[in-house]
Image (cartoon, rainbow over all chains, first blue to last red; front, side, top):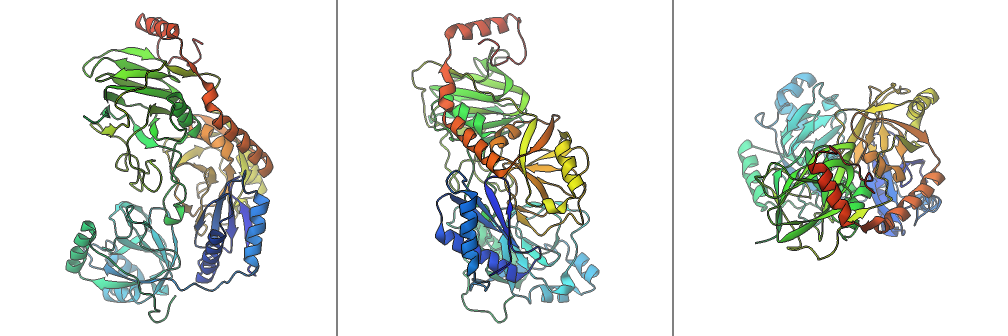
Length: 245
Length: 349
């Protein structure tokens, strides 16, 4: 059984908190509880939102009492498997060309790496998708190699282009749409990260694994055109790609 | 020709909203929906729509709309505003009508909603509703996510919103009676989920002080200014879910209450959460007002939620016939300049 806390987030939501750090093992527990609660689907459960280290559970208290929900969570926690489900493995094209990677030179300078080393480091890791949040389809991935860990930019940008790949602290983010952003932008992906017409909306899901495959600016532009036409299909692998995060 | 409502002037921030897009927060999609769902339901009840049907939410300054249908019945509910009916697009002056009522308009007629007073939002419902395709189960506009409503954005001039009906049903006009849609000044809240990031003294400061709603407040969050709430230790937390009404406190110690368009996850500690029963009244508080908070228990909050939901279910009981004499008197008084500006909804009842 795992250590956890149940916190009140008003009268229609509970937060099940597993810890307060960025850790794939905590994330696995969060996702495992989310999966089990959604399989159980008690009447009055509205929606669950997995985050990096907690699960927020929205419910209708006039149908499902807070006490009954807490009891169900406690029962599910008794034999919760903290191991990761085999997630899907994605290989996503990423263009690290300085013409689209707004902060590549700056990050290289800050980390003391060459641009080539930076690209090599960032694309050498299989990342764990911790959560989607903040914007539709925006994925928080980790953990980035230690040498790339930086605080956020002092001056957030009022706008970054869709597809931007940013880094800050131990995470790397994929931004499906134009947005204000305080992260360091080191690449851009042409992958269709969000499509409100598709069944699931978001390409990635928490628990998935992602590797970035460096592509040239020319390749990026070709793939982006196909994404805009709706003809670029990226399919996940289901077998492990070497060591996972 | 398909029936439409054409936008002559969009107002400050006019969006299509319903009761929100529930069930997609795990994809990063904000819930959105009306800031004041009670006023939305009231506007819909006036024209006989389902309570949660999509309607126009107006913030601070209203739009000017032209009827492009045989006839259309509109209803207005929420903050007070000068609502004017003009015979056509070129007319400079028209007849003022009250808020909280329905009106039947014919092709070419224009409705102009002025500045709102005593509240941040008002709703305009159309009998039969808008012919807008829901996205992920809702027609609510989520501007940051560019989802829903009219092309995922606020209305702009020359937009033409399709209507379900080309002509209004033949029936008498109605008004609302006995429904208080005034903004409140005191809001009840449950402590947590991150109250452990604050000292007892900081928590007391939050509950004992008045805060002013400041500029920069929007559909995502209400920015408050007042006595600083100090953190114990840091103010950055690892991202966590954000419930509606969450009061997050960033590094400057000035609280932000998160509203309909709140991001699904965020990284500041949340000292308290405004109870669900008080969120509609919170959504109508305009910039510049002072508000304060009062701690309640979970049990009390859920009792108040039940009361609020029962009251919203009975909103149709507040819809009463509009006496013709009332209309005539108002129009007459306005045209003679005997009364002016915002007409109080209850002044003539």
